[in-house]
Every structure is written in C-alpha cells, then in structure tokens.
Length: 137
Image (cartoon, rainbow, N blue to C red; front, side):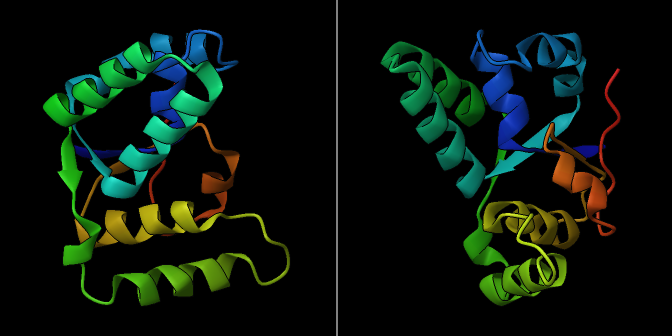
C-alpha cells in the first residue's frame, strides 16, 4: 500500500504545540506503510515548521526524517503537471475558493502515481472525489 502524506499530518507530528499533534501521534502507525510526499509538501512542511517554531534543529530533524524515510516524488516528471493541477483547482473552486493549489497538486500526484490513500487533517480533502482519504482512529 502506498500512501501520500499531506503537510498537515507531518507538521502536526513534529510541532508539539500543534492543535492536531496528539491526534497525529495516535495515528503514527500510518508511517509503517510505504509513504511518499512531493517536493512541494517537503517545502511546505519545512517552511511552516520554520515559521511557526523558529527552531532550526526541529526543522532539520523533520527534513532528515522526510528525506531518509519517505519516497519523494518529483512532480516535474508528471506530464502536463501544472495544467492538470489547474484543472482540479478550477473544478473545486468554481463557487468558492476552498481548495488550495498545493492541495490540488496532491490530487494529481495521487492519480498519476496510482497511490492508495492520502493522509491529511485538511477537511477540504473530504470533498475531493478523485482520492481515498485515510480514516484516522
């Protein structure tokens, strides 16, 4: 089983004062599966952790964990990647802008790489029919 991790889950694991930290820790067994992230998610996790914690040692720990334990998908290898992402972005933001571009990237990666689940605390993923969202305990 291949699982795509979203930044919300990873940030919650590493950021102890995150409102979702305890829930992430309770579901840490998901990491026993083959897990992957995109370069965009790696960048987002590092940026948010740095901005929120100002703790470079924690940021380095998170970076090294992701680099050493997760498969990092190179989005640039996906044909017509940005066009496909924008099509998802348009589809889910016609009436209200609720789904970010990075989240739409996750959908394209999920489909292109034939992944099994997306692990995310982002409520907007529940609206996306193209993915199967991991069910937390």
